[in-house]
Image (cartoon, rainbow, N blue to C red):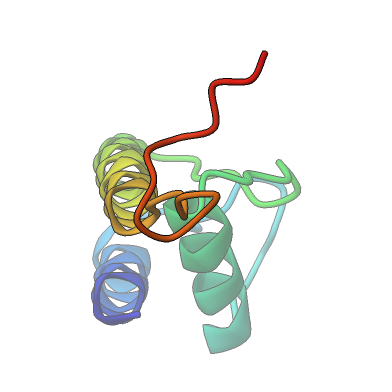
Length: 98
């Protein structure tokens, strides 16, 4: 969540600093648009309805996508490492009847 909010702030700052609008085909952007874009980019869903129009926005969105992938892989690896199959019968090894 912290990464998402930081990127949301970064996108809002880029919107105010660059000459044109942050999102293509839009005149003005609201805070909710930046939150939505940051969330869908970080989770790598990417609906495609909001697309950065300038180079700084595209670059930061790419960085956020990479961080989202690293987060997802780390989360899945952690969940898999926590999962341990139970032995079929206590005190005996795995069932080898097949």
